[in-house]
Image (cartoon, rainbow over all chains, first blue to last red; front, side, top):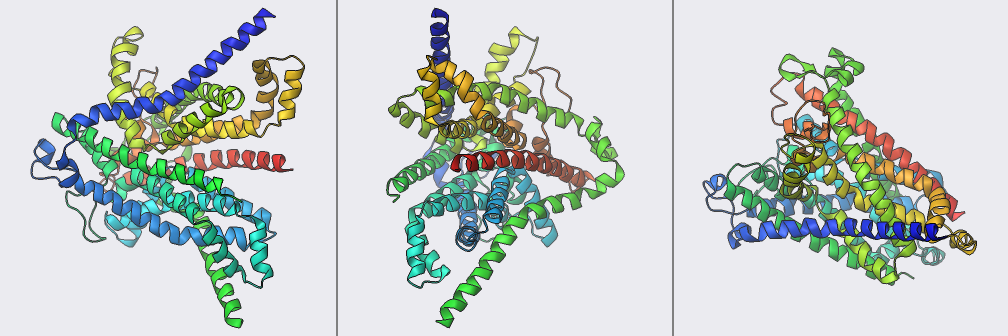
Length: 281
Length: 297
């Protein structure tokens, strides 16, 4: 009897310990990034592009990379939405009764979601070679778009499925076409679409492997689609590899900037998801 | 009236095209990568590429064995660390934790999943690598720089925490309360219920989560690259450096166009990753879909 009790307590404490480790790892990571990054954080970091001699520790910031990242993640999210919204509508509203097929499509997107970004990067690179596009903002946007399409489709699909069938039936019974019904449903899931946008933006802005081949790197803020663009994660990666201490410090500060951006996006999307599920009928 | 119907029809065709195009992406990616790896496949066979450990791009010798072993070591370490921790966490959150604790913990698990890979890499360089070099390795081996498959494994383990925890807790939530109640009513402790009822019931889900986590770990590039040491030899202990496949691709894209067959070999590496991850993902997703259907029925 006592042996069973001891076993129970033993495993319960083990579980609590495991939970502390799993949750604690988040604080450990964010804590490390903050303590290392804050001393190197200056206003110049976010307001200036790299000046002459930036990479041997002279003045400048990573504004080029911040803007480049925003361009690429933003562009990819917009392009991705244009493709994903019709796909999500199609699987949910135009495939009535064909459950096997629509579920098969869902599995395909799940699998696409699992394909690592390095493969998307390599494939994006192939497309660029094929069409003769050099490493540029455009190349980066194409690769990241491929990466975020599964994120968007999966999220939108899940959100659309929370809309009650009665609503669709009501629209249809009033004589609406399926497209008109889709418009009613789209209006219902506005916060859900915003969540999908945030998730896709968050994934796009933080990814390195997909833009490493495709976007190139530049010290200037790109002003056309055909110019190479720096991104924040790639800038962190390069700066960290530098032997100069000043430049390494900038990597920590850039990591801090990226972490803050991503945390804000994730918190916003979490809040939205919560709010959204609260008003679910 | 006709215009409305026409609009519906045209839009439905358009959406069909978008759907087909994005679904066929999976075939196009596989086909494209295969097409580009044909040159290296013509020169040596699949078997040769996978089992040879001679990597001399200048001489046209591409042996992927060290890289495959590097990937396997890192992934195995990550799963060995992450799976028990995540299982215990999921059981705690589902069966023991008070509602408020759950509400407190889950957001952080989600936040962890949002952190970009490169941040994990930076953290690994700042925290794990020095820790292994100064505190862990000296107890076991004479010298280690800290940049090792162990460092890669630990960083990866943390990266896959959220994935495993969220899938397993979802699976555990689908176990009927009656089943647990029956076991508890017979006098079993909570742990005994977990051990004898829940694990058995959740096994397919746990397997699916593990397979999914393995495939995620397989493809992770930048975080592993930053802490793994990137030395093209087969690791013999956890303190040895390794060189996983994705890191190989990412590190060499710059020079791959200047050496003949090099780009083809790297695309073959990408193809290899693609095939393995495709299969693993498909298996785990099918298990999960079947589970979901069983629960719905």
